[in-house]
Length: 538
Image 1 (spheres, rainbow, N blue to C red):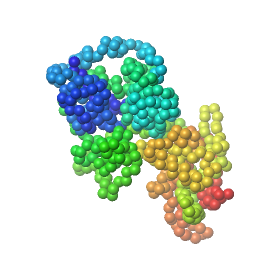
Image 2 (tube, rainbow, N blue to C red):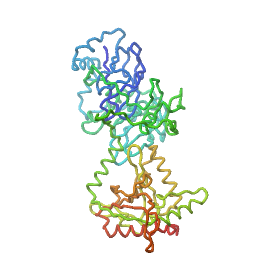
Image 3 (cartoon, rainbow, N blue to C red):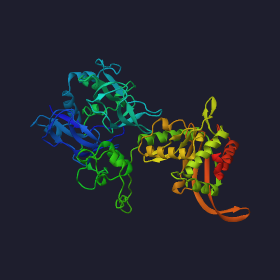
Image 4 (spheres, helix red, strand yellow):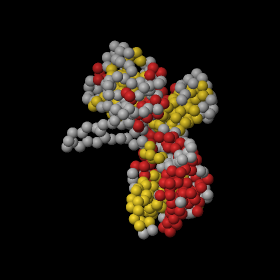
């Protein structure tokens, strides 16, 4: 009986997919587990494996063509089998019936089982689910697997790198055994508690465990984003007679295939790197993660804007990443729950400029103005704990420790690594920490511990030439300082107009915890440190 293979839903936000490459052609023998094609989704390019055995009888979507989820992707059956009824006038209901008839009685019976019923686990088998790696995490994406099916796993081994709404984190195993099953391929997303992997004694058959896995949440049949089950083509196929050819891939400008890992391809998309310009260091020239991280674009590869004819409306849609959705949720909550008000000041930067020049004259020493501002804020916060506070419905928490969050821009949005006990650190220690965090942020390697616990936040756009701006408070902080550029301008000193350098700062405060006078006093103390930076060394 021929099996209809539909375009699978390979991520929670995927609505359509593009066939990047077919790795099998019509007439080829297919074994269960063979890679049929590489499919581009809204998040990554992933290898799509077959869950059926037989001969590839028909390809419904050619390379470069795009189709909606559940559209006819391919048909697998016996060599020479007549599939004309599946391709001609049959309705989707008839096709669905044919597909369902090919399933076992157990599959039919399972579909009618109550959600509370679960299959008994074989002895020693452990089901590993998608972990909640941050307090705001609702779903995760497998960036890369560090273990393959069949590998021995020891307690403490790193199983995979998982991308959350905040960062990409290593996920370690708390069990020992053999990796028997992988529920999500690299680049695929699923809700927290969805099937991630199965570990147990070598040789244990866990096919039924994976097939019958249910999330504990209500309506899990609709919410569980297990791509392997969706790829079984049990949903109604929607045969699209004409498919639109698109090319969303940054791979190459030619028809030459580029071998690249899914994680490397996703990183290239985020950084706008043309993979045809990257030399792969992996097996057979395959482009891997380190090649993207170490890539330096040539001067000849300047990006060219998309051509749009005059008078024609045009737009591109970019799917929201987990990080972007978290930013939208958290900042909207802050803006509409915390009563913001803003205090504006302008500091004289002459002494700060001279101080930085002298400090950086020390061999192997380099600090930035931002490092000086972090240190100055930390010292000022010790003198004004009301600004270094948190709001709760029944109380205020005045923090005696100072953890400064430093906003860092990344391709997906914004992350805020935290310099812990900043008031106790030297300028060079703060500079080294901020530089390290910025590099980790760009490579999505920040850990949860490095992004949690801030008591005050600094956002600096001065390096972009922005003179002044306002920010939204990074809750649960009570204030955030927006730092502008140092500007050369005429200033009045001792009654005379002279050349000077000034910097504008704006502090957004939560009026529930920081009154206007309190915020003003903090900025006066900060002014003393910034305009006389040598006092920070005392």
